[in-house]
Length: 482
Image 1 (cartoon, rainbow, N blue to C red):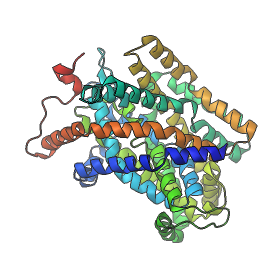
Image 2 (image 1 turned 90 degrees about the vertical axis):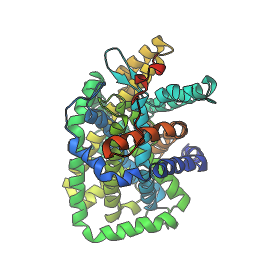
Image 3 (image 1 turned 60 degrees about the horizontal axis):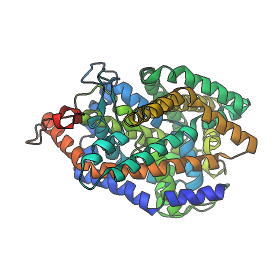
Image 4 (image 1 turned 90 degrees about the horizontal axis):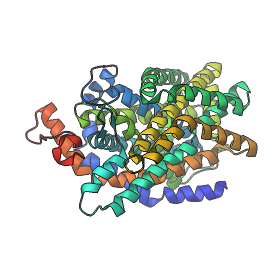
């Protein structure tokens, strides 16, 4: 079964998708004049420095930070810990380099998809807003020549189905249960049930409660994890520079078998690094735009900048911290994988304190990721209501009352049949491929809309000549109203 999954993942994450990931990232990077790098200081001033600003600007459900907190809750998750460890165990240290490259390009890709989600979102009579890739496929592609219903509807359906696939194949519950079980010696099933109950406590309160909980926890958990990881790196300071050297060398040269590591080709490192980067920071996957669409914001680009910030924190900071810890402690050669490898690295690096940081960090990361994803499914379900209100209601109820159940089922399956973490992570990689490819095609086609919005934003913020738009949101143009 694992060999079959490896073959499927190799095909799904083959040349076409890798080319799409890098091509779209280059398209937006070059098309904006490397905006994510030129304006990085400005981006931090308007994101990091305004995280707790509560002023409401425009229609929406959540403050800009609460919206991004949901998105960051889903991105800064188990993929940052167990996913990175698994990438190194499977593709070698070189996989980390390709995670970085994908992230640098993914910053502007995520900015584009989040901006488009805000621009094309639905605005209800109550002032609540909902949007995402299926929305901009309908309103954006649906209004363009050469994109009839026979084209964009199947795209939106496949995308939505791919995202809903993660409803059933979810890594969070399994990874947290695996780690807590190995640390405290308690049954995985018991941990899984507790985790599910913790998820219910949040998701039953809807998007507003999810946003409040994420807004309170995300800054704390990221700071806690980075602080604990920094202590381990300081303890192993002499190995940090060699670790970077190993990452760069392995990115372009096959990693030889050493210890329990079986070796990896450059192609495997590339494919694994890109796949886990997208699973972790979700740039191009199309999940985070659902949360961003609910923000109270006065310009789509202003919310899009949070996408750059997300990828930076997720991959450049948190994922890099995990990767360095796994490498400097030497545990990457142990033959372990997933949460087990990450846990061994933290234990090796700082004993019981490292285990505490790891376990608490992983639980918080997984818990907030699970609750954040519930918001995505609800927004997708609402869009289904454009065509079938009965099905939309059923999906909404399934999301609210049934979401934690598949996670428990995966734990039961894995423990009964002694399935390793490698196979479960292969399933996760497979679940990201189809929606990512479809979403990348959609945002590439809609890139002129993003470029116009960015040109307008530059004119307003930096006094650039020309480029101002009459309508900053799709619904503001009378020609677009239903």
